[in-house]
Length: 205
Image 1: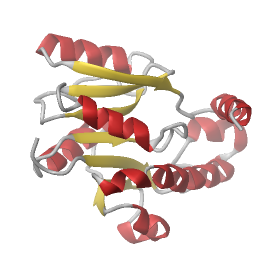
Image 2 (image 1 turned 120 degrees about the vertical axis):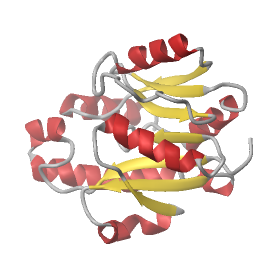
Image 3 (image 1 turned 60 degrees about the horizontal axis):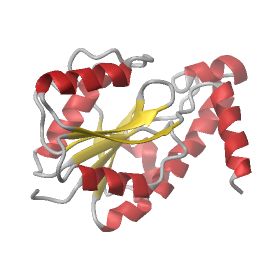
């Protein structure tokens, strides 16, 4: 596969009331936004090792590019997200990245268990598979990647649903695309998710 692999990191500006709304329902919008602000840096820092063999691009939303200056050095480039739902934004980001002639993977900033080694594994899998998913315990996924542009790959899926991954796998099967799965991790969307993550994290210290 020609070209340097590309990792798209989707993130949103941490303005109270616009991010982590399910978490904010328990702890309030200001605290939820402050927590999410920290997660942006934490996720980007953990992904830094991949920059020695791939290109890390931050796909931003919710504010002009200059608002993301505190994290600017943690990515090789900054691309604004397109309009539309998550499927529209992923489709546009993947099309732009695949136009550079490289395999592409995307992650968000909700999974604090994500390590750069898993991204490396995803790229290895894309050498012989069409697509790869990192399974999230809530039925979605924390990583998605494709070896090449796959027409219709992100169309008509039930986003933010317990059936998101199952529906996407069914789409791949129907289209004859080969798929690999990474180990299951947890996203943090609610206060209970955060508490479970903290308990698990403390056991690993």
